[in-house]
Image (cartoon, rainbow, N blue to C red):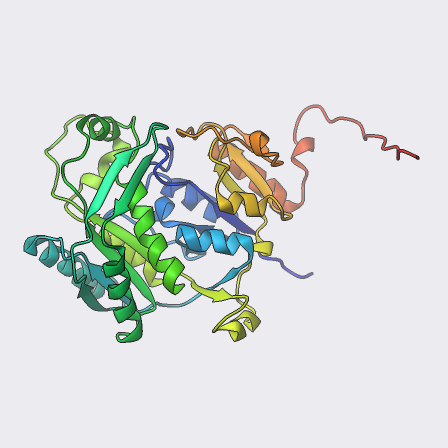
Length: 361
């Protein structure tokens, strides 16, 4: 009997105040559990990044959000790798001490974890990040000098021959005090998330290689009543370790057309039409990836208890989805789906077979 790998995509969009996955790494336990009931789990940095905390999941693929959208659409495939050569971009806006600290983080991951971090570069101008919270309650951000970021990335790719890029950008310390206080107490939206998505999207869209971002901030004053979900972000001054670990084995992108067409012949490449199930918060179904998967033979599972600041349900978009209350229930659905068992029969009452009558002219 041919074994077909069971493939799951886990999505928790960033910057929308998700009650699970809206903080640094608090969706990682969900990813760990799902990875045990599938052959391949594809997810994105917002799920797997936990600042200085991370977890090795051998069957899990770390895919940046823009790349995940292109994968879902069928434009890009995912080529698993044993190891990437990772380059590091540091924002010129970093103070000398923060520059040194983050270079020491990179050296620590080389010496302690054996990662292949080869070169770093400073941007030629400060990147100048601006942050805000929209009226919907979601976070947004802009980058003042995107060309400087892209020039730095191009240098690392063309001259240092890196295969993935980590970016450390100086974020403003003067955050909205109420929004920050709410977030630290487990009730708000991550004020950094909107800008972080812009940074990684720019590089992946322009160069088609894995990229992820770690913000640089000065440590906040001690908060004795800190929410456990926000605690990972306050262990120190750096968010970089989890990014470097994720990028070290992030799959490379291959294209249906373009310079590496021959890579599509490799048997190990994963394509969007091979995804069996996608899991997403119930009110966050408006993203490009979900819209693409809704046109495939992919089981879409929405989780009600992972509430967000959005109200984009599958019903509002005409998307057929299986609604569950919790990620624990979603795990049961995945087990049944993988076994080829209809979840409709896993209840005390089973309905009779419907009689279908064809309408005649």
